[in-house]
Length: 285
Figure 1: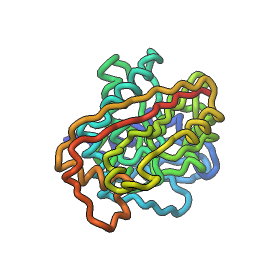
Figure 2: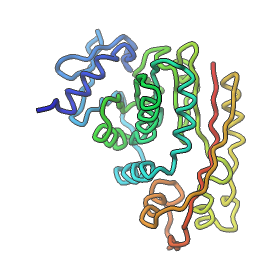
Figure 3: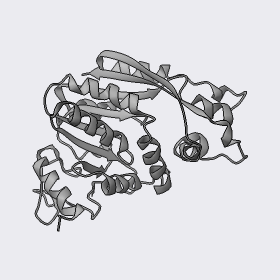
Figure 4: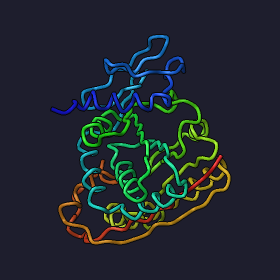
């Protein structure tokens, strides 16, 4: 009989425990045989049966529920974001060594899991992977589905990680904390932020926001702010339009903010294809 998800996750975290810092007192932490992450000041955080650890030190609410993360898992699993994953993997391969990667705002972990698999399959090196999100339901889903990865409920404003712990920080279609990103990066590391470009999911915007200013989109402000925080910034654009299976359309609507507050009925059958149009911003400290 194999190890439980909780014990297996504790064993994996123990191998990487040097990356952890107590979110309360910032001291080093260790992972005990009792599946607890603790510091010398006895601040303790239990590893849950699903294999994740909750490092939150204050109450937090999230608008993201279980159904949204299940929809994200299905959409990402369909291969819609495969060109994005491949582009990120090609960047990671330039390190030519085992690397540590943190996905901030990782949700249910599907992006990180795909990237880890592609990286390790391509080169035979190890990618130590950690994901953090304030949304507990997302991390529970990640813990259930993806093994040999570190999943944390946590707030980067009270980070559970040591300084200079990661070679790469991913920030995929998620809010950023640039100050903390700089603290967490290793000296030769980089931040990879993914933001929408003008054509991203435009088929959905045309449904929801026809003839309004929301039908168009610009990421110029986000790109400029990234450039203010990092040096040697490069920008790579990933664009493709693909046919989408009819049964995936409701999931796609559910996982995007455009569909959360929709009251009037829309004709989902009009969505026959979907465009992924993203900028990959790569920056170093």
